[in-house]
Image (cartoon, rainbow over all chains, first blue to last red; front, top):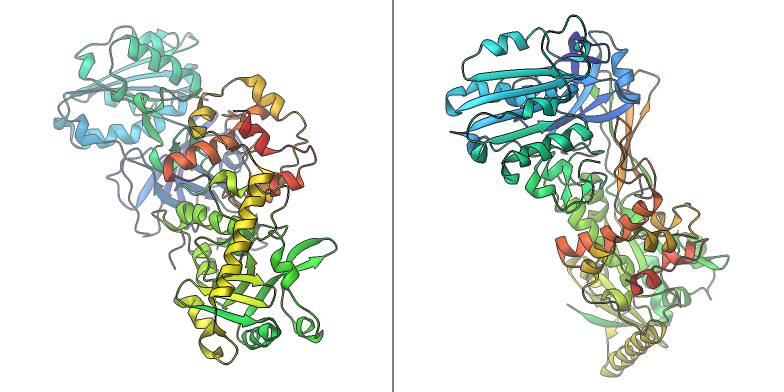
Length: 272
Length: 346
């Protein structure tokens, strides 16, 4: 029997402290046949505690393992943060639609992340880098609350040196150690180089940041159908049966979790 | 498919034979309510016992969906690194006495579960092992409104056999092979239904339709889904939900509500069992996400969501309402909220 509610066991092989409230968990898939595309998500089970949806932050091209960058916000994530390396977790999926990368080819991709929202975008970024020549240019605009809240501090400097990539960062509240820009992420959206009309925008972050970043991209001339938004909804089953993530005409788990502005613009409070 | 007649006095003989092969459920009177009950020896002990009267009443108190999708049902789990296998019950069973307002909801579940890309093996197994013998609903109650949502007070689709109770016996109409198989070995009990029998049945059905039209004379507007989409005034929904005590009984007895939650229970051996439990969009936590954000933090928005789901999203997706007019939501409502009045006011 194919049981869509049944997770398979994975093992935590490493834990990276990203910020005081965010960790990256490296998971070994125990030879289970599993692969995902950028944009898809999984349901992660903490045995005996519960299950919650997360998008992997590693490259879809990495086989046999996945990385999940997760913020401690509730019951499931708090339990996860207390687990040591070697612990067993459960995984179901992948679910949802992938980014239509073929439509990104020959264009500039403008990625806007806020806080832990950079996690699923890193998976997309790695997928783009895998075939970097296909895309005109990749921009990353990343905002965090403070310098302490920046994820992937150990990788971002390297990304800046990659060909075809341009990274800019800001933090909401500056400090003595920070030499870069200060202000919410939209300060990085004032000057958008390149062909804005044909540019692909990809946004993920807290709801309020998503809202203002989207408004700014539209104001700068992005086409609504070219703005891809990661919608956060309560997704219990992950494949359109349980009803929780219904948003207007969409089941966010099945039709998303990435939807375009064009798809969600008529929905009441799409970012709530 | 066949249309046969079973004289009243032979009904129990037929049931007795079936009872040796199947688990059978029928609508039984418990105090002054109808509930599904398993046929056991007591059913046959009383020679005067007849389920006629119960078959002629409106739908039982509990929705039929509970047979196919339990309020709490184990669907998996992990024991350290091993998956917990859940065995499917394949024992064949018969349910007698389902009404059309419990059959239409099966179409809702068909769309949501069985036509889903990943399917729902537990729900499917329950369907596969069940034979539904549905009955006409000759005497609709004041709470009934199947006519408003486009249904008839007699089985249309979803039954394997349809029974119409006549004064002298029963008309059996088989709808498929599953239904035929129950009558095959009983030629000695059944006879051909006569034209007079069928005429009597049609009269009874017409009478039931007329009764419903008397109960619910005002039709719902034909552009109902559009009207709901446009009805965004907070005042309207707050007023409509004013007497709601938030018991959510309406959604628990609703035969079409399909929402569920996956819920894990820790085992002593550091593993967990996973359960699929009935859920309802009226709960505050229903749409809440990890960080605490909630699409519908106010109750009026959750109240409205039920209307969005049943009368807007479902007809937009599948061309029929996810409401069968069974009236259970009104029957159980402590605040006496009548869904008909809200729909009528749109």
